[in-house]
Length: 352
Image (cartoon, rainbow, N blue to C red; front, side, top):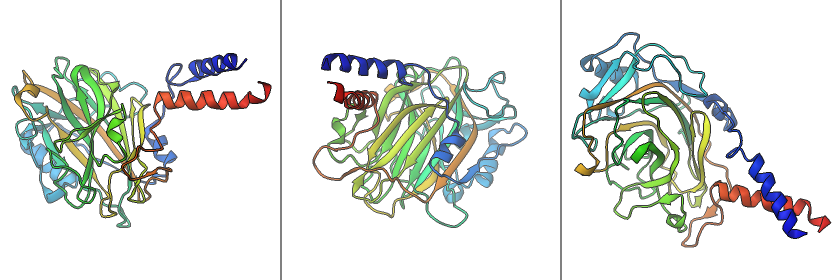
């Protein structure tokens, strides 16, 4: 009898799970509403195409860059005619038309010093309060002949008092900085690439790939995949852990407005001095050696940057930071199945 109910419970989960049946479409504005992110902004784009020499001053003056400069790759930025004008990203309602931002990766380039571009957009709230939860949405397209090679970076978030930290092997120590970018891998596999702390034996979590050399942590690699020759919509949520000794920080990604990953056991900081600064526009091939280099000159394209924010951190119940494994896990499919099975068994327990 018990075995029959376990089988029934599994079938209920199998055929009702949004992961296996129909995916729920959630627009960025709806995600912002869900997390009570009432402050918002968007990055303006020019109404006409601009070559690099004119694109640079436009970005510096209009996008609120840290230190008032483009850190790397200024000459690789142009505003061009949309190369894929006949379609929006799937499941989106964003406006199309007008110039888009083109980023060039010269043949043989790898790392942010040889190709792509990097800068930091500092977003100041109207009441001067620090952001502790932020949502970023944008669309990205890759040339049809784009070779993903071993991987490369895409824009995300950065924060903390060291505004140039948590990048290029400059590790997070909990009080200096954090970063949480997107990344493409071989064949376009997507992931979150984060400079964070790794407490509570987090690196034993199958969804986390940790580096011991100061570089970032790969989170949920392959949970979504980028497509060539068309627009892809990505939405990134970061909610900082609070209190600082609790691993209850959250990162979530919606790909084409469908939830792709959601991890809730992250320690971004061990000090309240670390808050979210804004958009970390960082895109290049790499990696830091020639095995990551693009074999030919290629481009990505960006449009429709929007952000929402709040001064409230994560309110998820999490494990205190210790050497022991965390008691709270991310919302992976296995945990969803297990929870649903136990719930159904409990529901029918009186009949067993």
